[in-house]
Structures are given as C-alpha cells and as structure tokens.
Length: 357
Image (cartoon, rainbow, N blue to C red; front, side):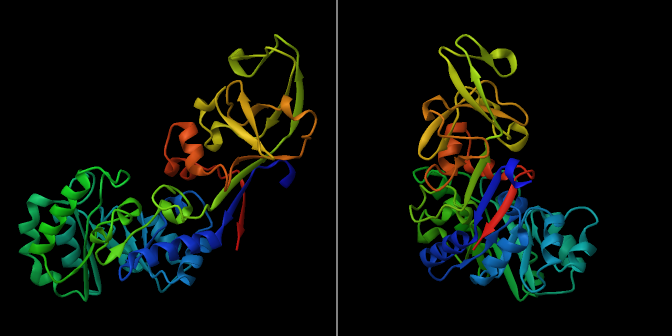
C-alpha cells in the first residue's frame, strides 16, 4: 500500500548525466560502471545498467560472482568484471556466464592462465598500498615471468585502487600512483586503470585507460565536482499524529521529555531501514522547507518527529523528506556521522522504489 510505505525516488536521467559528466572530464579514458551491492543499494539493476549502456558504458564492475550472474542473465553483450577475484572451484562458473575475474593473487593468475582457453580479456590487480586485495608490488617479477602467457590475450588490463582518494591533499595518492607507474614500467604495452570515484577528480595523470566510478554515478560525494547531480530522494508518510503534554515522554527508554506541550508525528522507518540509531534526539527531516527534529530513540520500524512548529499544517498521509536534491545524501551522511556510501547501500528493501527517467 503506497499510502503507508516510504518512497525512494531514483532519477535515472541523473545517473546518465553523471556518467556523461565523468566521460567528458576524463577525455580519452573509457568510463566503466561500478554496479556492485545492487548498484550501491539503489536496486533495479536492469534499469540502472540499461541506462548506463544507453549512455555508452560497455564495461561493468561487480563485487562477487553472484552479482555478475544476475546481471549477465539480463545483459548478454557487456563486459562484467568481478572484483573479488577467482576463488575456490569457480572457474567453470566464470566460463559459463562469460564473467571476468579480477586476478588478485599469483595463485589465481596461474590457475586462470591454465584453465581459461578464451584468450580475450585478462584483468590483473596489484596492491599499491590499500592492503586489501591485489598482488603485492614486491611480487611483480613473478608476473613478469608469465608475460608470454599474458601476451596470448587480446586485452590485458593492469589495475590498482587508491586508499585515500577522498582527500585530494593526501600525499599517499601520489605515492600509490608512483608505485603504479613502476608496475606499468615492468609490464608495458597493456591497458591500465587506477582510479575509482575519488581518483577521477585528482587529475588527468590518474585517469590512464579506464576509470571506474561508483558513488559519483549515484549522486554522492558532490564535493568532488559540483556538477554531479543528485540521484536519490527518500520520503516517508506520516502515519499518526499525537499530542504530548509538558513533562510527558516519548520513545524507548523515555529519552525525550517534553518541555512544553508538543505535537508529534510518527513515520514508518527506523534502524531496520538504514536510519542510524545515533540520530535519536539529534536528527531531523523536512516538510516544505521546515526542519522537523527527530525526538526519542529511533526504533526498528518507527521514528517520532516534532511537528509543533507547523501548527496543524501537516496531516496523516503527508510525506516528509529524509533527503533530496536540497538536503542531499552527503548532507544526511554528515548528519549521521558516516559516509554517503553507507547511506545508500543500507537503504531498506522495504521502501517502495520509483525509477524515473
């Protein structure tokens, strides 16, 4: 029932705009689409991937093999790279669904070179300082020894990932780039990729042949580039209005006590939907430009807000805004004390999703 269900509005044309913005900014570098975690929590893989394909995107990155299979069943001709690599007994599955494992270890590399008879595309990931996934820089010579086998492939991509690209002034970005250049010099003649969302806006020398935007496609981290468009808006209906007398309390553990007669509204969302409990008595929502404080403790499914200032201008069934194009996911992340990645990847499946062109 739409009346009592929070609504997540996703602007697909804004996704297209952000992709084209990055494509223009990166010049000759190919722009891939990172659609892991169900397109960063926005769902509708078929709609978002389709929009990116229509925008000219041909290569996509997902986290694990199940995500790759899901997209491959809907889209047969695109290139799908699986970031978590080639793990135990997955070789035949990669071949069956025409997925490309991002090779993260020497063991994976040797296994894939031996197993894979389709010598089309190979992606090898080096760790230049993230210390998470990738072949360690110190083992570069072991890869160099396998260069004859690498050269059997029509396309080889050497990639890495920046640890501090969210901070343009962090000197570690340049240190990683120099490490990547060293790897490039020992494995020349291939294609290269270093930057995801943050690295893209560090400048041209970080672009190489491919960039891999993620959060920027979905409207996050607008401080990287002010022209990034807002993509996602979250609204919730009011399902009950109450009146508290001075001295009465609201919510679990009675953490809110009314200092005066107070009108409250209850909205059907909570920490089970990705609204952080730390917003208890601190957060706020908006209604027609008015800021309405969250009062009491955020519950699993419900939040209480103070609507006293509206003086009966809001009714049951009216929608309040959690974040939108004015109070963005970046703003909401700052309010929550987290990052925009977490805000949208934790979006509840219970929300009604509206995809708008």
